[in-house]
Image (tube, rainbow, N blue to C red; front, side, top):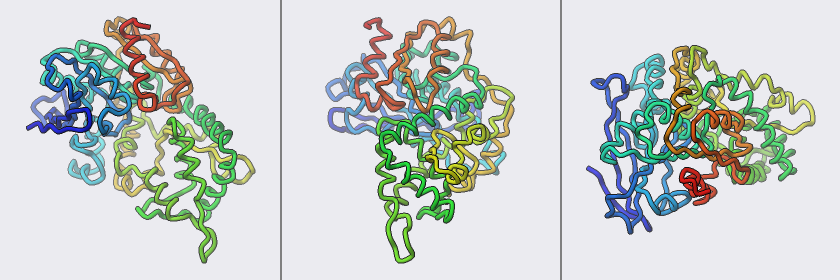
Length: 434
């Protein structure tokens, strides 16, 4: 039964759906999907409103939990009934984590199960639930980051379900191997770190001091997380967001306190770091992150870790042996995370099996994209730390009719930080209004 309730300016309705785990086996196991319908209070009784489906970035994150008409949602509610979908395995949609995955069996069974949690399965979920909501009419899809990857799969496999496609920071390469993705990523990460130190030069010494302490002590945080120098470096993932550099600066500025035993990492610093580094709330991000790029018989084989070896400036021990700045890393998943993070430790063998798989299926259809008829617009952030702009623009040229908005006004989270402006611009592009 659907339950409706109110927040300022909106009416919310909880929706639950049952879909096949494997869409190739319609009589087999099923899973539950959760989504939250949002409509403006003054339009709640209008049955003629078109639908907009929001696909969250990730992988592994549930949809945004907005309060009222926040961020891009305010603009969307002017003309749409919005569905905020918790993609399979996230949020309230039959969640997957260290507690639930053992129900599947051992690591081999868990790894097999996780192959059903990529963009292609998410799109088939969307098509399975669309008729019940729209009466069969196509809907507009807004895909942020990984949600944009899913939207390109949607255009490849079920364009008849789409009225309009809007992508923000989410145009993937159609054919790059995951190694190509990270070879392009590390130089961008380096630029973001350099920009952070230009903004906050005092953080050069602070970051070195913290890393030196970690190399000597390797403390265990209150939640059981082993804080190594490499783990500390991974805080650089913050630098891909609009406020990330400032958040990182505030995190670093009061790391140490004087104790009876000398200087130690403060409790407040440790609490903030464990909240930033833990994958307890989104373990799927770590488990299938590299798999979202896999499309052939080549294993991902811990690509981010392997490719990192080609960029020695990211080696903390080598950096601290000299006098250069410590480089943070970014949106990269490493095998040591499954040793440091208590939320991931029980899943280490499962992650190894996924990294070794060689039976990944293609996610995109270049031939179908070349004859696309769905209005499509994409925001491409000029130096996006998470998604390579060069890869995105090459893909944009491969999708018939796609219009791009290339901007350096925003970072990867522009659709959130920019409020109505990003969504408004994309809608205008699809309607030939700009």
